Length: 516
Image 1: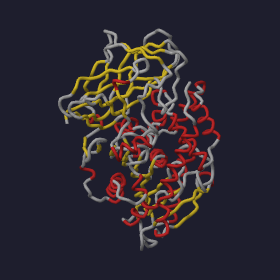
Image 2: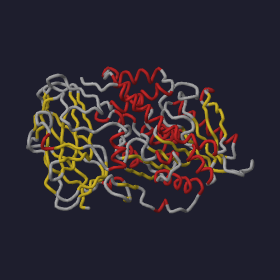
Image 3: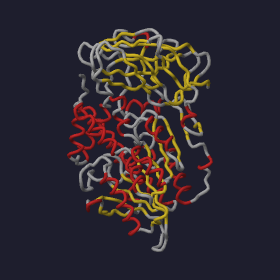
Image 4: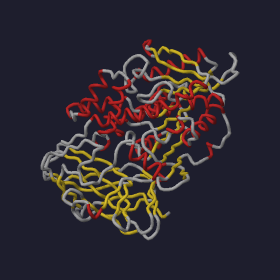
């Protein structure tokens, strides 16, 4: 089984974390903030900072925003945004999540103690600041987003949440298609060891996950489900907090599909925003105090739901998307309207490919590839005609005479036969130009176990949701191979996969496509 060196992902985590967390430090001297210790669950010390609006007297009652830090980030992460919020009338408390940096305890990975910590911080703020118990909000990026959503399920005092680059389903995020997202898990694990103190449960789960210990799969899934806001959807809906979700199309740690699915099941006030980029890159400039669309929306969300400001956000289309290929935003009434127009092209010709060899089709590198696509619009490319057909299956659509827009989730339906009982394949959707150069639109992995060799079985696979514009004169191509550095693959030596299209159950790819 192929492995990508853990050291590479750890190094990437260190570089990325350092670049993001040190930049706001220069502003700290001008913020007038107060650094405090807050007793979290069980008395664990949480290092925190408090920003209060200038001139707020002891009798004032102001809306409160609580900001748990992201994974591996220090307590200064949100200083720039905390100052902006305080300038507009909020009391802001940001705290370092337990187990990281100078906060006490061990990393619980958004476990029950982390959820209890959020409530303890709210308790402290209500007792020690001019915060109003009837107007409490939470927000965060990545880890802070997940904790905020989980806290909204357990603490009815929370009236509004802005969960940015977070997760609703932890299993569907880093174990989608029952395939370990290697670079994502290694990056998170490496950053945790570098900046914090992983608890014994995290150490065990991370070790089992990266070593493909399938005997512990049920335990790992149960561990992840307990840390997934989607598992507490009924509680979130019952508490009625206004939920804003924001994410990047190319998030290689928490892909957008799981957020969209969660959004559709929320019954209270809600908003969903997707933009180009990778994990936390859509919010990064805002953490530096620079203009940022995501944080602007979050501020408007809180202004309306915590301060009662009539800023029109409740009258806008609640699903807001920005294409990877063009400027400007598009509004939709709900997520299902985004990909309502599905068009299929057949995967009629059978393809036979040997496993264990990278064909050249790949999803890129965590954080780096989709960051470049965000700013330079340069997705990974391949020459589709030159892909080695012994190791890659290729099917192409007709050539489109008019520009097309891909919006939402493409789905693959096919029949697979393997010479071995286990295996992994990765499906890629490409935009192919006249010269055969394919630009990656989306991808997703799929892993199977305990199949009877030689016995066909059906696969339905959702690719990661996206928004991409296909120029006139181009066509779409579905490419399938068995190796990608983003994922752990489970192909035994000598395995061969066959993709067929039985007449009784034809294979196809369904793409949410409409004319531009």
